[in-house]
Every structure is written in C-alpha cells, then in structure tokens.
Amino acid sequence: MSAPGPSVTTWEYLTAPVLIHSTQAILNNFGRDGWELVAVTTGATPEQLVAWFKRPVQG
Image (cartoon, rainbow, N blue to C red; front, side, top):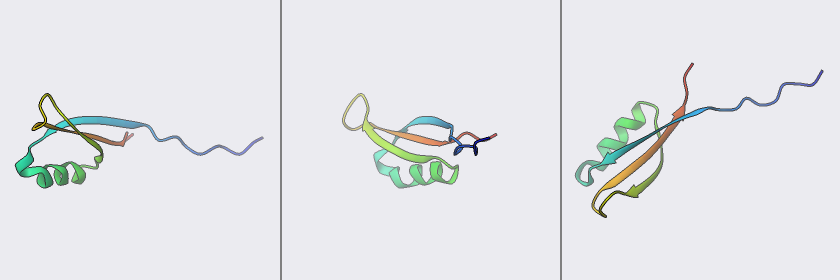
C-alpha cells in the first residue's frame, strides 16, 4: 500500500472593482476576510481597476 499523496487545495475566486482613492482600505478588508490578492488589472477604462482574489474553499 502506498502512502497518501499531498492534499490538493481547492480555490474559490473573486473579482472586485477597486476605487483609486481608497485602494488600501478595500484591499485590507478583503484580506481580513481571508482573500489573497492575485492581480490588479484595468477595467473598461484605465482609471477603473479590478482586483482578482483567491482563497481556499472551506469545508
């Protein structure tokens, strides 16, 4: 019988708009809820930012 392999993490993902004037507060709020920032991209216009988050699925 072989030893069990490492467990695989299952992730859930979230995208959210980020307002330029309150970026830190918005990102900190998501971090407190367990979300890890993966990337920030521009939205429909360069002034609009979209944050991409992930966190392990609970349960």
